[in-house]
Image 1 (cartoon, rainbow, N blue to C red):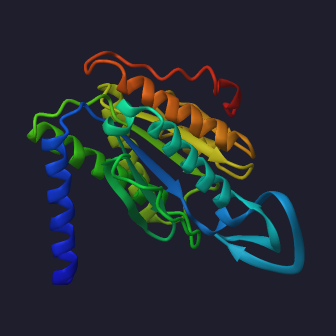
Image 2 (image 1 turned 90 degrees about the horizontal axis):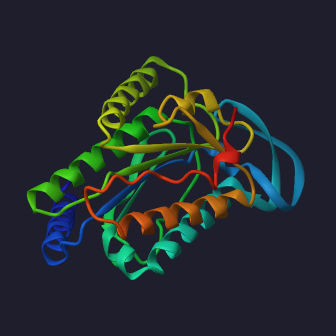
Length: 266
């Protein structure tokens, strides 16, 4: 890493610490771990035209089309709805911290934890490559643990963190990815059993491997999103974050999943 990159990282970390000192409001940490593999370009609706060509994405053959609304488009709109729902509540906008991690060929942090009064909009998303789900989960867990330690070091209370895993397929094959998945599963099991983390697993479209997603869920359930459900899910997620921010740290807050229970993949 060059000197400029190191300087930028140091500046970002300093700003994150300064924010905790100037705004000691109890925090709600939400980590979004999103699949941005090439299959997220799959068309889910709208007006589209097949070109007669095909392409291979993440090991599958797809027809090439122009126009339409892709899974990526729906995810982008969903994140906008989440941010808007949180910003509409003054308490939540200064206490809810959102991080966005993507995974395709590799995992990447697109937006580290910060309150939404400091984030003008969700990060830009680009879909390509394969599905390094395990690496994405472990990076999200690393960021959560790092931010929790910063809360503790600066005397800032926080609520039980939340992690939302979104994927439209299944992990890429190979021993390295299997090792990453096993490590992530073990870490999640330890944290959820101690009530230190809540994890929601969400399948996007009809191709998601729901059995794999259940491995990482707090309640061993996975939910499937299609079409308009994207907006409904992220609005519900935003309301859940707002509700948590209005409670007292230490109160046991259980996510009310009644609104999305009908989406459970059996």
